[in-house]
Amino acid sequence: MVAFLVRRIFQMFVVTIVAALLSYGLLYLVPGGPVDALLAERQNSGQDRINQADIQRVQQRFDLDVYLPFRFTRWLIGWPSGPLFGSVGADWAIGCQTPGQVRLVYPDGTFELVEEGCADYLTLAELEGRRVSRGVFFGDFGVSQVILRDRPVSDLIATRLPYTLSLMGASILLAILIGVPIGIYSAVKQYSRFDYTMTTIAFIGSSLPSFVFGIFAILIFSVLAQRAGLPFLPPGDAVGVRDYTIPWIGTVQAGSFLDRFLRFLMPVSVLTFINIAGWSRFVRGSMLEVLQQDYVRTARAKGVREQVVITKHALRNSLIPFVTLLAGVLAALFGGALITESVFNWPGLGRLFIDALGRNDYNVVMALLFINVVLLLIGILITDILYTIVDPRIRLG
Image (tube, rainbow, N blue to C red):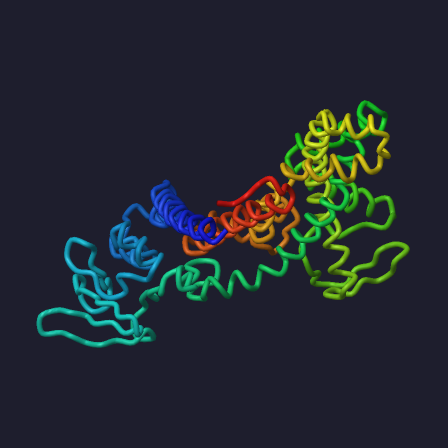
C-alpha cells in the first residue's frame, strides 16, 4: 500500500504540472485577450489611433510583457519573483516619468526605476504596479485582475465557495439517495412498467442540456405560477434585495431563511433531476450485468432468498463501476454547475468561472482550473483505495 501511494502521489504531481502547463499556455494563446479587448473598445468608441502606452500598460497589468515560460513559473512557484532583464522580458514602467525606464519589481512590493542618473524607489501607492505571487504551490493564487481588482483570488473563491458547496452537495447527495435505489429496482424489475417509465425519464434527463430544464423551471414555477395567482418560486439569485408576497405563504423578507430556501429550490431541483438520470442509468446497467452472472443464478438455485441475492451477492459487485463515478464528485463539489448557476444567477464558483473567462481575469480562471485538477486526481486516488473495500480480490501493489 505504501509503495502504491508513493507511486501514485508522484504520478499526480507530474500530471498536475502537465495539466497546469497546458491549460495556462492555451489560455494565454487563445484570441480575444485583454489587448484585443482594449483595441475593440477603442474602435467601438470611434478612436482611430491607439495609444501605444495604453497597450503596454494593459500588457504590464496582465503580465503579458513577461515571456510565457517565465510567466508560468512565476504563477506556479513564484519564480522569478525579482526583476527580469534583457531577452527574458523586462518590466517596463510606462508613463511614470519618461518612457523606457526599466522597472525592477521586488518581492517586498517596492520598485526601482533604473535609468542613467535616475534610481528612485517607489512604493505600491506611488506607482501602480503588479503584485508578485508566491506561487499556487504555496497557496498564493495571485490577485484578481478584473472582477475584484487587486483583491486576492483566494478571498474571491472563499466568498463563492459556500454557495457552490451547498448547491452541489445537496444535489449530489439527493441524486445518490434517489438515483441508486431507482437504478437497482429498475434492474431487478427489468421490462416492467416502472422500468420503462424510469428509463424514459432518465433518457430525457440525460439528453437535454441543463439550461433547458432551468429555463422551463423558471417559466413554470416562477412566471406562469405567479400569473395564475399560485405560489411561485423566485426566478434567480441566492438572496433577495426586497420583500415580496407569495400566495398562501405571505410576505417573505429579503435575506431571511425562507427567502434563501425558496431561491435554493429550483437550481438544486434541476441539478438533482439531471444527476438522478445519470446515476440511475449507470447503476441499472451495472446491476443488470451482475444479475446475469453464474454465481447469482447459483445462489437462486440454492434457494437463497431474492432479497439476500440482490443485497449480498449482486449489489456489492455492481458497486465497482459505481465507485468509479465517485472520482469526479470531489471536483464537482468545488467546480459547481457552470450552466445552471448562470441560468439562475447563483453566485457560485461555476458562475465565477464563466465571468472570469468572459472578462479575461486569468488568475481567477487558472486558480479554479488548477484546484479542479488537484481535486479530480485526489478523487481518483480515493476511488482506487475504495476498490479494495468493495472487492477484496483487488490488491494495491
